[in-house]
Each structure stands twice: as structure tokens, then as C-alpha cells.
Image (cartoon, rainbow, N blue to C red; front, top):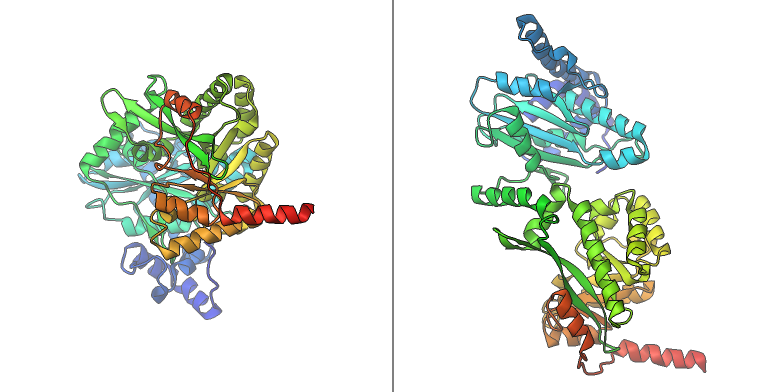
Length: 525
């Protein structure tokens, strides 16, 4: 989010009174909304602090002094912990050991540990390590400038910072300050290609989540997620979950890394139908997990956790290999040129080795790229549009097709459709459900059909469950369908049997098909 312009008189007021105003802000005295225009917009304050005004530097020096005081106290008291050596070489912040010692030295039974992770670090470092380090330094300076005296700020991992609130009476205490720090950290990095850094937040509370630093850090990392950004730019931290839900999440986190080795994962296949041609054209591969104790776990429950704990690459490659093996089997048993659609996560798209992995996988299974279709969301495609354009071009060279899943539910921006080489749009099921009863859904679907024709993209309607929905969508010009009306997701063996049997669908021709046929005849005359 770019900062709003500030008029000169207001800017001068911010500089002159930044210490008092920021202290009040961070204490939560004026934080009804991060973006409130009624109290000298926080963008102005963050700009005054984070980018080097004298008032901001004074606050930073007080915070840094608080960290140094911990180090000096240890040496003076002869505790045997030479914490003065625990300084991170890049950011010059205290390290994890100093943070853990500060937590251990806190006499109060309660406190809050916040973890802020610069989520773009690894991806940026893969292309330019110097820029990644510079971005990390800039963010660390912003945090150091903005924290209140008495907090302990440390770098606890290559891309993560820890902040200890020793005086937090409960877990909600200090949330206003954490929101402010998140806002500061997310400001545009003007010297790093105007990059807006992605920040993830995790919070753990003593004694609820543990007592020592190691326990609290594990819990904070487990709860880490990207904050929600409101329509006016305000930061909304994730709410704490009920204890039973947290226990379930923890159980899934422990079990998921063993799912591949334990042969607990499988694929289900949902048919993709070309209604106008009355034929099966492929299937979407859907991940399933059956745990020996937890039972069948819904993808809606484990996939977000899979992405959060960093397993989307590993499990994603398992899915791709399993889908390719099945395609090879389809070809061997004479099912024709069926295509399998595989979902691709944002993390996989940003993997710099994706192209080489895809090429090796295709070669290993002896299939052409044209047998694979990768589905991704609008949000994932737009994460880094310049990088995505390069990756997509490489995939297209292999013959791999690309489709946007749940179209209409993400960025709702048309510009990326011009800039990225997609083959298909899948209309989000929210617009498909009861389309025959909802005029606004019909209008949206008709617009997407027209857009697809104009851009020469295929359109698929997913989630079709009734004959009425099918009839309306086909009348609007849609040819490709997926949903329970035709078949539910099924095992690999059941899909082969489905593919061998005649579909038994009546021939249906949409008005668009007839118009295209007439146009073709006129052009060939």
C-alpha cells in the first residue's frame, strides 16, 4: 500500500511532535483504526519514524539502549552469559539467545512474545542476496525505531524478528502496538524495486502457551499467519482459536509431515466434461488424506496448515508425480488424450526450481506437457506478476496448460489476463450455484463468457449440481463443465471405469456454437 501525500504543515507537525504522538499511538490511546484520518494518519507517523526523522531516531536509540542494557547487566553480574557476543551480523540486533534470557529473567508470570517474519526473504535472496539483506536491515531499523523502551527486539531466524512484552497482563495487551509495528514493517521498500514486504505475525502468551522462550517461540511460529488488511489499510490480527480447535490443528501439524511416508495420501479424480462434444476431456486431481487415527481429514482443514508449515512444495510434488503416473496409465489402457488438472500453490509458483522440476517429472513418467494442466488462483498468479510471466512462459514451452481457478473471487483485475499466458478460466462456484435463480450471477457468468471469447480462453463452470444450472450456463455459451451433476470425485480405478463407459449425454448446442458455425461457413464461402 502506497503512502498518502502529506501536506507540508501537517508533515512539520508530525516531525515536531512525533515522540509524544507515537508513544500515545503505540500505547493504544488513539488506535481505533490504523488508517484513521482523525489522528494524524499513521502513514505520516510511520514515515516520520521509519525513514529517519530526528524524532524517530531518538525513539529508536531508546529502544536500542534497552536491548543493550540487558547485555551490559549480564556482563556486570557475571552470570556466565556473555550476551554481548549474541549480535546478529546483518541487522546488529540481539539474537534468539538474548531474547530467551530476557524471557527467563522476567519475574512477572505473564508476558507476550510476538514473531514478525519477512515472508519474501527467501524468494528475494534466490535472485539477489544483497537486496534481501538490505531489505532485512531496513525492516529491522523500522522496528527498532518504532518499539517502546523496555521491549526486547531480537532477530530469531534469518527472516524473523522476535519481540518480548514483559509487562503484558494478557494476550490482548499490546495488540495495538503489534498492529502498528506490522504497519511500519509493511511500508514500501523504495530502494528495493518499490517492493511492499509481506509480513507474517505470530503471537504466544505466557503462561497460556508455555513458560520458557523455546515453548513460546514454537507456539508463536505455529500461530504465524499473514494479517488481514482492511479496506482502509488497517491491520487486523488473527483471533485466537478455541482450545479444541488449536489442539486439532496441532495434531494435524504433527501428523502431516509423516503422511507421504505412511502412504496416507491419495488422489481423487473429478471428470471434466465437454458438453457440446459429448465427451470426457480429463479430470481434476484432488488430494485426499486418510489418517489411521484422525480418519479422513477434509482438504479444507489440512491444506491451509500444509501451506503454513511449509509442506506445500513436498506434498505438491507428490501430487504432481501421482497425477502423471495416472495419466501414463490412462494412455496405456487406451483412454485417449485425457488431460489431468493439478492445483499449484503460491509457494510452488514462487519456487525458482519449478521449471526444472516439471521437466524432470514429465521425462520421468514419459508423458507430454500437453497432458498436464496447472490450476492456480488469481491471488497466487498476482503475487509477483513479472516473475510469474517468466515461469508461465517456460511452462507453456513445455506444452503445459495453465488455468485460473475460482475466477472472479480474487483480485478482480483484468490486467493480468493480458500479461500472463493463460489457457482457461474456471468460473467460481459462487457464481454457478443457483445461477438460474439469480440474475446477478447470470450477468457475471455472461460477462466472463464474453471475456473468454474475446481473449480466446476456454471457460469451465465448476460446481454444477443441477440440470437447471447446466442449462443456463450452456445457453450462455459455456462448453466445459465440472461438478456433482456429472460425477463426484472418485478413485483412480473408478475414474477409469467412468472413462470407458459411454457418457449418455444428449447432444446440446448453445447459441454461441451455432453462431460460430455460421460465421465459419460464411468465411469459407
